[in-house]
Length: 115
Image (cartoon, rainbow, N blue to C red):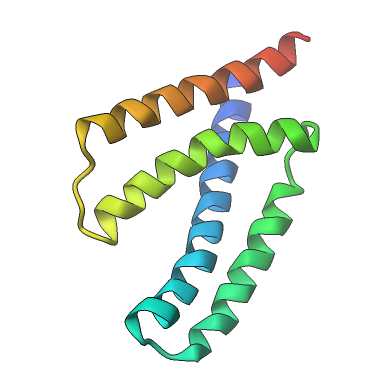
């Protein structure tokens, strides 16, 4: 496999893991605030958000570019979360939005290599 493909797969995987950490860090307080779950959920939520921040530092690109590109993967993972955790099937516009976000992320990350 080409080295660039493996590097891209690694970055995409890191972005996906980062997104899961952020979503979990936000979802657990939601459960506490909106569904009356235990306030103890705030402890793993804080740990998950700390993991999210640390994972963002592992990217080799400039921070602003990483945050911008990460947004595309975050939207994709959030729609998967909607489907897998909240049991809400994504609509065609959800899928179209994910495709647009992924295209934007690719433009940002691949363009960074060219420039």
